[in-house]
Image: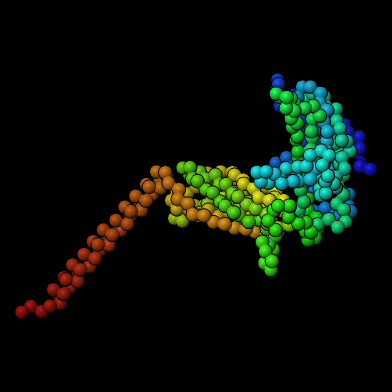
Amino acid sequence: MIAAAVVAVFAVPASALAATSGQSGVSVTPVPGDRFASKSGTHLELGVVTPGTPLDDRIRILNVGSDEATIDVYPADAIPALNGGFGFSAKGQPTHDVGSWIRMAANRLQLPGNSSTVVPFRLVVPAGAGGGEHVGGIVAEPVTTNSSDGVQTKTRFAMAVYLTVPGQPTSSPVPGGPSPGGGHGSTPPTTVTVTKLTVNPNGRKICPRVNYANPTGDVIDPSARLTVDSSLGLGTRRVTVDRLGALLPGASATVTMPCVRGVPPGPDTVRLTLTSPQGTTTTTKDVFVDGWPLFFALLFLLILLVLIGWELWRRHRARQRELEALRAAVATPSA
């Protein structure tokens, strides 16, 4: 039985929930201050979880609307999304990974308007689970459906749950995905691969877009570090992302990274490094950044200094020749 199975519902001031007239919906997030909460506060990072050892934690469900809401809460597996990355399995769909390892203390809530509730859960990784990183989610789904032109729609709100199981991964690629290794006799890949890096400078700003794929049999969520180095020694700019976005085996994704501002003008080298416990991938791309008046001012100053140096050297050589001629004249005896 899950510890602390009583679910407490308490009112939260409207200002805390940012509820305004006409606003509706729910959200599911880590409890503020939770030890497993990510830096962004949007998902859980459980770290290394040993099979057979129960892990207890809590989540927070918020109703940001003014009306009472009936909300289903359930765990889900991560599944490949149509546009890359992953989504989460729907209610009633079979779960085989993280979604099957979580048991919620409550599966349906009656939540008053402008209020929140804390729901405990327990996660137990079964013996024999594949090692490596796993990702699943906890979904909050309002029971009420929205109807428009005879079409009923449901909006789900999900929070990702990341964890690492000790040992080697035993999972295989998703159906239809590329097989690890790409062929017989080849060495199976161990980490993600960058398939395309797009950098289109806009003035002194670069907003890189990266396409990457996971040809392995493990779930991988790499961190990203992008460095822009000036080929003229005018400086370096960096941007890092803790989690670029998890990929299921055989899946791919396209992500736009945070923009790098104030990049050095002129020819630059853009270097992107994706790092995960499974390995590191690095790719580089050359780019020219123009449109900086100071760059041309510095270039003009450099040319001016070169010209001044040349003129000083020319005058020095001329003076040397005059002195040599004078010494030669003095050393020559008169007729």
